[in-house]
Image (cartoon, rainbow, N blue to C red; front, top):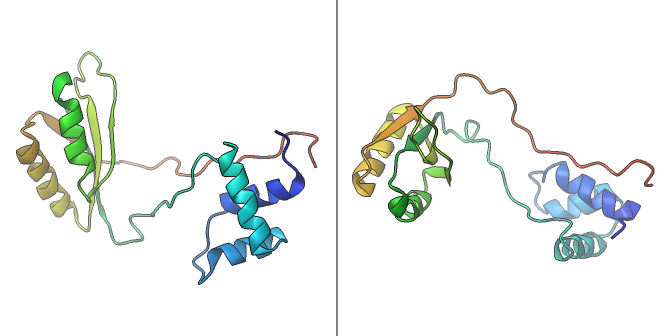
Length: 161
C-alpha cells in the first residue's frame, strides 16, 4: 500500500506523542490539518491494514513519582516459567516481564522491571515476589546510567510527497 501525504501527516502526529489535552485527538487532527473525523478514519484504516501495529502510553515513571526502579532477574525452571511469568506479569508494580536465553555464568531466564515510590519498597516487592512464586534464585540489577530512551521515528521513504 502506498501512503499519501495525509496518511504521513497522521503518522507524524501520532509519533510526536499525545499531548495532555482535554481532547487530544482533536488537537492531533488540527495539527495534521484535517478534521477529527478524517484523522480517526485514517488512524483506523492504517491500523486495519497493519501499517500501525499498536498505540500505547509510555509513562515516564520517575516523573510520576516512581523513584524506585530495579530489574530483577530470576532463575526459573523451564517447566515453571509460564506460571511464574504470569504471576509476576499480573503484579501492578511490574511493568515488564519477559524471558531471555541463559548463558554460561548467567543462568537467569525471567526478567522483571519493578517500580515503586522508593527503592526500599522495590526491595520489599521483590522479596514478596520470591515468596509468592517460590523462586529463591534471583539477582537485582540497578541502572547505572541511561544511554537512550526514545521512541523510533518513521520517515517517509525518499521521494514520497
